[in-house]
Length: 356
Image (cartoon, rainbow, N blue to C red; front, side):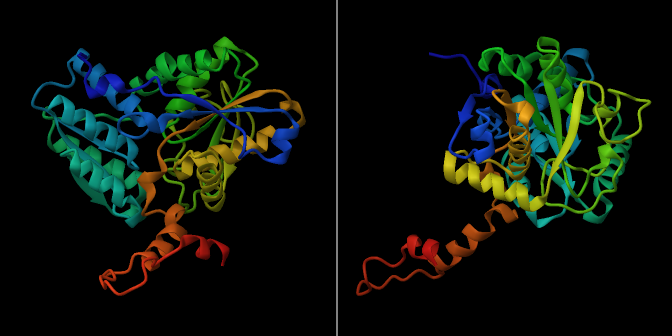
């Protein structure tokens, strides 16, 4: 018998070693690569952690009361986490995201959890979502609660208190590099702080899309790595060195900002699925690509690199990550299906496509 509910299953995700996917340079350097499987959270991503902590912190301090509506603007995974938690706790929920085809899964999952979804103009980006959300909150003051993941200290705090602790213990207290994507900056801030306290020589590496290296002062351009690269510098990482310009080099406990392109993120997410059986989203493909870059450096010889896999790849079937498989599936599964009893028994063999 158990008294656990679904929210009690958030966290304590596995940390696994990968070998077959490693580049020749990583293998030659004898680098240990460990992936933190955050897709094993019940809502399918690392954002379940911050969603739960933001809600429960607000309940404790009284800013979220029974009968109030929880609101958040998001690229998707935080919205799903909040929608799940609100369903479990009985709150109404409004999730605000851009009206883009690649957000199809996020939209339907939030709706399945009972949340309402407001879709904003894609061309207005994250700033547009922020303005719309603030106006919505102002019109409903006292009855709407803004989770505010980009500024809520409950975000990095839960990573300091749980994710970082788990990684340190699961790795055998040996982490030389920690690699994470930059969405809100909460993971890099919280986990990074904890790991550097445990090992002052640990290198915390933040990953941005090559098309949007705003933390180095570059301009933002469109990309397809959902979950990272919102196009504006993050509050948490900015506050690690508030007076420092956005440029190459370290920032607070963050050692380095590296990048991957949209195509590289798809390439490495696909390789992880094909060679390790680990299905991840595009941001995890980006972080793993950067881990491979780090593993090839001479100074990484014999070191341990921990990579965050933030979400499950099954959430991205509307994304270019699945383009090839979906195109094949359209041919393999025609509509209407062949219902003739006189046809050959075998109607499709995918191996013929793979060899073509």
